[in-house]
Length: 188
Length: 192
Image 1 (cartoon, helix red, strand yellow):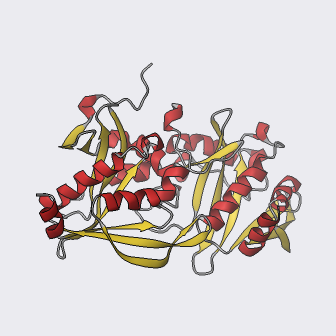
Image 2: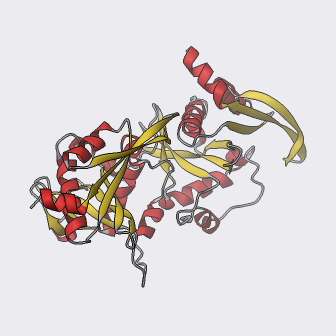
Image 3: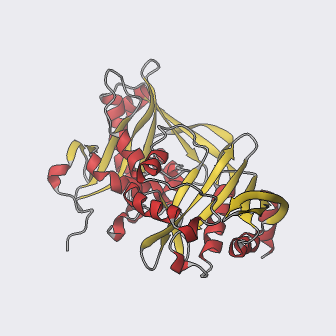
């Protein structure tokens, strides 16, 4: 894709967020099926390209309950993962945040922290949501660090929530309220 | 090397010619450009596009709706000198019974902002709305920090009709929206 046509939706420093690109669905499918990537993603069954394409069908102008974006590496100029706000309750003003860096060679570079920061800002300042949740495996320390760096607080423990690799594992329920987030960002 | 946005003129369909710009029928082959504008944080702040769209969403706009009078009349804005599509504009919420419509214009390439291009493109749209579509009233909703747009509206003879309190949520806070209008009679008599 030529530089002039990259549809940047939210600009970040290391990464930007772009709309989902149907031409990259095979790549998304590769990530979602990758044993390393899907480990804590609670994805136990194989996904096909067709299922994914169907998932991203145009909604025909209806208000969606979830929005997904592609994570684009600014310097390397390629997609490396995806992020989403899902299970949006428009009445209560709450939603869940999820993200995955599909290309594992980009792990450990604080990219998840930046994506979280961009998504949180979007959820509060543009979607006008009140509260954001993140459900993170207790074993997935890297992910709870990126939630905590962004001010998320551990609200609860979901015991034996998911069956992974032959045993039940616990998940943390993290949350961030808009007011807390505003306060934290004005103090800096 | 020729850049992708330098369009072949055969893919441009001028409908109304102005001095610096022309209003053209839309071409679905430009969908990737539309996607870029619709996504660009700088642009979408003003065009109030809050959620991400995919290329497929945009391609769907081009599917003809048979046996239906559209609520939309949309053009591409063609920069005649640079030979480049730089934005879109037209009417939405066209109400054929009451003969009124909402006018909109987005210059998707920020390099072309503050060059009176928006003013010219709006003038062409207004003239078209009153002289060809036979609209009675054209209105525009502009949130208050969008100074560029209300200056364009005022230069083209729009008058402030109302201030809608806390109408839009922009960058983390509620802001008012100005509602501007212009009537066909008034416009015709001052543009004879």
